[in-house]
Image (cartoon, rainbow, N blue to C red):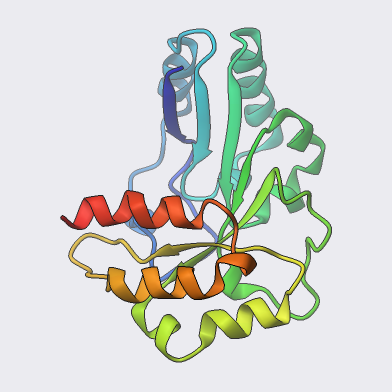
Length: 192
């Protein structure tokens, strides 16, 4: 199956330190060109909506993109900071897996506490200091019902201590999302 990441917009309502996409310095996405790209996808393509924040797109545009993809029997996944879920909850049945990042902004009144963790994966991007100073353990302690997918900080030019990451994963594997170790393996290969 072909996999495609589809940035729907580069606009974003957050300024995450770890963002790989320098969202606030990108030109606007031309919607007509975006539609042409979507129409060109082969049937059964696995498409991941990304950005920026896909939730900033108007509902009508999202519905059009989704309808084209569904006609082609494509699967749709989503990377969001949670805004998509707030603004477009009626579209969630059309989405397969949701990677919910920006969890560092969770509060005690967590907005999505009952999400199906097989579909909605809480992603915590970790800096080396987060492993050393207990920030990640504190996050896991505050939300013991969530098994976070922890990923090391990977912006170009930044180095993550993969030994720290591996040791953290080994120590807390029962409290982490099962794909966390595959994140370690995938990312260690990038640093070799």
